Length: 194
Image 1: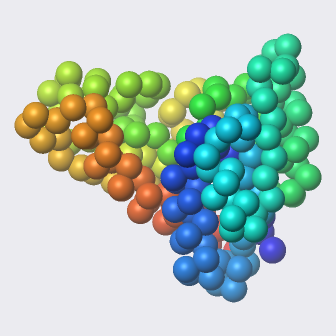
Image 2: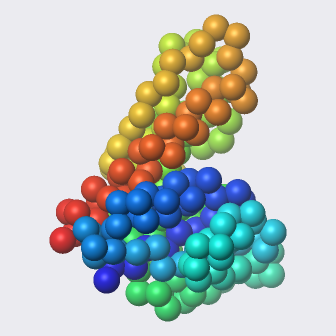
């Protein structure tokens, strides 16, 4: 059985979309895979409640209790590795990971970013797209590399930028697409590993 470990920092809506897809499509039977654990750097992350309600193991590792990013990432790797993951999924995990962490999971670490990469890496993507006069925006699932938001693209979805859009209205439309493409990208990744 291929284990998937999902890292979150908040509500976990992308994590929930992946969990629901895994159950609806019976990934255990079709892909020999399951979501084994959800780990958060915040004890109050609402997504942890969803994971627990669905019988998924959860862990909390507060990054603020560590002296450095390297120390946090080293301990996070130890916690993740207990589940022997085939794939580690970043789903709203709001931490920039160290090169050592990324290297440890090279080729099996994915993220979703709320822009059509390579455009608008980093934060405030929706407002930046509006300010630039973009006609389209979207989301990208990509492999994680040591350089922020530049790994190989696995899946993308496009939404129009509408007249009068705010960062919030655009973000809401993009999030709907994130929930569609992230489970799809994970399933495609798992199929390639068969």
